[in-house]
Image (cartoon, rainbow, N blue to C red; front, side, top):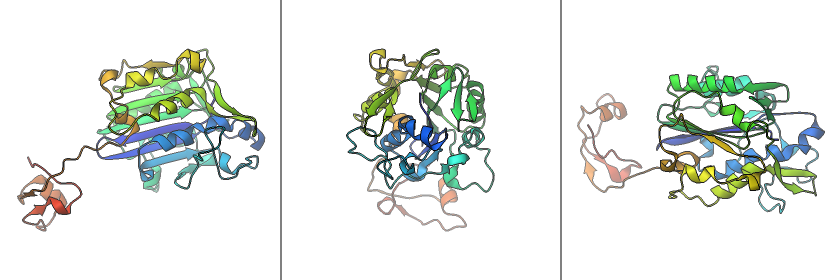
Length: 325
């Protein structure tokens, strides 16, 4: 069983965003002894090729500062404790009791109060590829939040439909590591969604990496093998989603991972891992000076009130307009 939740978003060829929600808080003792499941978000966080400014992190459990943590201000993904995945670059945007089903759904659908800062918003559009990773204590058709409320598969499916109607994504990859995880994507009905789960209905999702020194497991099995797979991915990798489907067979996971692709328009073998797990930008470099006419739409949007220069030198700019139509 697991605790937490993750959503990561990449604006195709423009920017990258991520949202993570660790979804349960209990009394201090029980909270820490289930910390291995909550650690999943921190490890995946380190593998996302996104700028931290484009990641929204929702964290209900603060294991790094728990009184029972023998190594304060640290979280480790392996029992050798060589890599602290809770480093200085981890920025938590929603903490403790801010992590609720209501806030999670509001972030997904964009229905946040006007006073909400940009760092707590999912600023996506119809060109955005979104990765949602969730992990928590779950059952048939639900995932627990804060050990006091639940998000159901129907609520999640309806939130995704709102996102589609409001043009908040282009393609969406949903991954869940929880008991009976496949039940959470059974009700999806919106276009361009691909879903993966760590377990089928009626199955538990099990832990991995036991550490006798602190008496807890450090990760969940499915997430452990997914991250082991992602370690081999680089920005130029041609590895596709079909490869991701095979990363944790039952012989390793004990549970039976599942996936759903019927809502997705593209063939998974043509969908690169970096389409969701990396911010890969295709930029063409030129040394030419390009003349932009004052009447072009691009010039009007960038240089208003007649301030457009006669020549726009690409050497002086980070990105250049190669053609204007």
